[in-house]
Image (cartoon, rainbow, N blue to C red; front, side, top):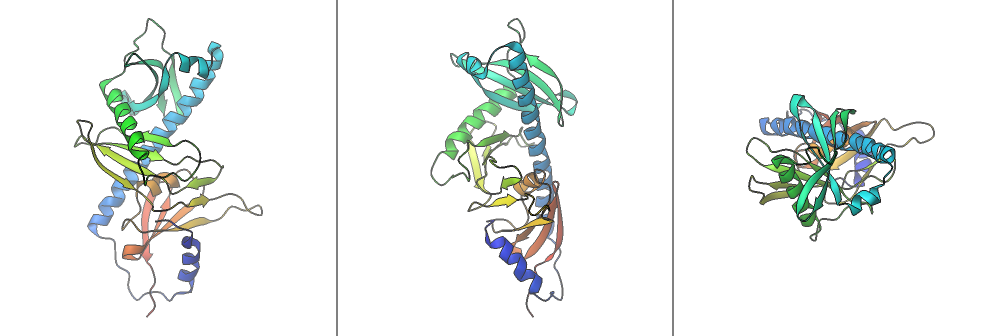
Length: 281
């Protein structure tokens, strides 16, 4: 859990004597850190692809002389991001009518750059890939599961979603995330992961925090904080959410994992063990 105790906890740490010895992370913890870094980077890439493609889509809507409302009346349902050839990502805005999905616009995105794309014309290929269909199905199931009790968000805005392509074992993960409402204030709570097997069955889920906490990196008195310190109870190392959030904030994130008394630095998606939490002699 990341809670408002984090700041006070940091002040207490500063007053404690340093422990005689620090324990290095275990091999299992380091493997989990590597996975968290990779997933956090992938989440960020897919989020960027959705963001920049949406900006271009809105521009194209204006140039086309239509509107979101008009497209919704024609069946616009949402978007999906999937891997494309050459290591880039393909963002497809799709509609649905009579139980069938069809592409409305497609954009190829590399990092934060929209390389190509636009509306799919009536005589173009409007079909969606099997992978895109599977990812959309999983997201719809995850959104329904999130509406069950004990899956609260930490803002009043609609949830964001991130769907990652299948892992080598076929498992596909959907992240339902509390959305931001204030610039430079990023919610660290209210995020969930739902895992689906190759057949589309929900096989696992987790929350990443038991309460809500905002990571506030806004300027104060003309200065930005040097970093943000939080505590985490649910894992012995930072997770992909920490890695992902760190790529969305302009300051370093320090995480204290309470169960094993370790301090970690998370900066732009990279996780590094710093030391054990000092103990009193």
